[in-house]
Image 1 (cartoon, rainbow, N blue to C red):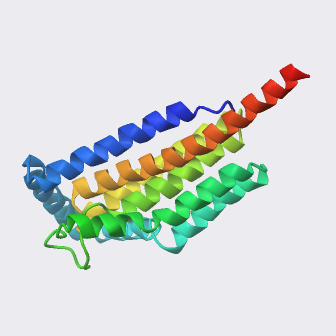
Image 2 (tube, rainbow, N blue to C red):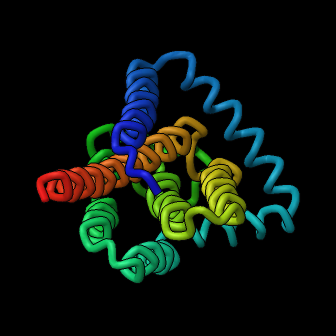
Length: 219
């Protein structure tokens, strides 16, 4: 698979920019705050009256943090390691390890209070579940696309993983513990985070390929 660091860097920039815009809108107390309140109230009321729906989203949300994410991240790293791409393995491992600290720092910075119906403590913006799932499941999707090139079925797996990221993000306002802008910001930042580490790994691969081509030309 041809390394394309600029493509991933551009996607990282777009996703991070969306996060920055959402952060500014939330901090400014703009229209998005009122919209957040109306949406999270409607979603929570819908879920509260339907135990089967609530149980489904509890199951989904439980796979968006903690040990499940560590398992998914380990799978992504092992998949790359088995292909003996050592710099990519190291870069993605570093990205996944550091990602666990990102949202806690940002939450302390923004200090947004959770929705009134939330039954858990801590601050709300951005969503740690949404960020962690986007970064971790997103990197697994990229690992599948990279490791199994050029098999077409790899896109089915990758798309399924990206849909799962959306479900984890949706589960948070459905359960009334996050506003929609919290999860959208978390997903944006998480994807931006994953794309950045993918860009770094692709940059290294491109540099190595160019070096090999130059040595061949000199012989």
